[in-house]
Image (cartoon, rainbow over all chains, first blue to last red):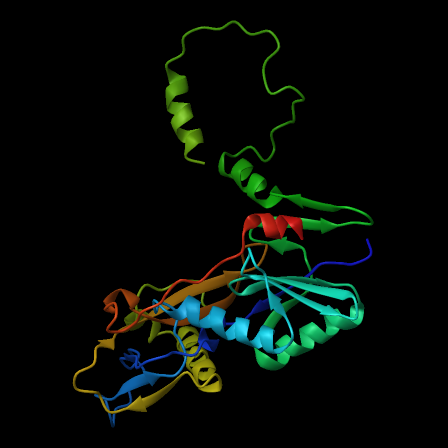
Length: 191
Length: 99
């Protein structure tokens, strides 16, 4: 494959969002200043848990990317695209996870540097895992699977060592009324 | 490294690892210039905070990091008084698959 997909993660993303208006929080338990215990913290940036935190982060990131020459997607507002001399650079944002790809190595490197100089980043590398999906990038195809999720279910029901079957049913089966099935169904639907 | 996730700050303050984790979170606040300590205002709602303790573990289930996150008790915020707009978009799964 010509253009690989990459991913990166913004550390403590919500702490980057600027707050509009006055928001005060109590001093955290266990870390109250003994000299001024009645003082409170006036927030400049968002904290996790605040109603406006996700939006504040999205605004900060959007503004940054637009200043860097990116255009926000018309339909998907979290897709950012930059064109440079006919070459494309694409970034998909999922809150604090970013998947990106560019038509030149230079564009990709440049994007990583820009992000790293503005935010604290981690897990920079080729795309392998995203939103619980496993991604395998090969020569001319990409394989997306839910293998981790499937394995966990198998584990949950204690079938890690069970043998495989081509047809998921018995070949010579006589049907009869079986009340115990109802209980099993309940267990399986929980998964 | 502490192997246990704790329920409350009282427990956490008796554990050196968790104290360090909380300190690390507050250091991050300092680096990011999240807040300033000021006298309590008279007529404005002050929101409570809560420590959340979470262990990060590797593939084998071994605890690799004790992470303390200080969160605001957003459910105590009053609409229009404390906040207005809250919508934030997330990516459509179609876009992600398409990429």
